[in-house]
Length: 176
Image (cartoon, rainbow, N blue to C red; front, side):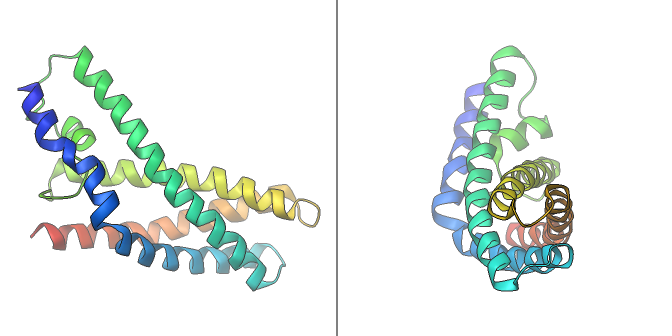
């Protein structure tokens, strides 16, 4: 039973990232960068173009790192759960979410919901850390580090709050 669930779901780890999701990621990236730039601009008195350039670079890096960290975290958690438990993998939505990812043939069920929420949380944390550090490094001599951290945190929380319903809606629509 373990081998079947692992084999049947493994293809969803890589295929959506490489073939199916890049147009969607780019559309979301444009939306997120514009929102975050506007919000950071409210806190930091800097030229919009400069902040936009910084946030484009930071968001491209965090998008790639988010995919990488999600994959690593999912594989590590999956291997730990897979090798240390005798649970029924077919009926456990958390395990299905870890192994399944949301991609080809996914259904809008509790496994997909846990997968999307996990993905969003991982990406939010990665974004706040990496974007905050990149912007602090670039603006360290001209702006307060605490204000930069606060602005990046607020900008990311707002952009993810706006992005999450869109992700759920598009996934729900695609799963029909």
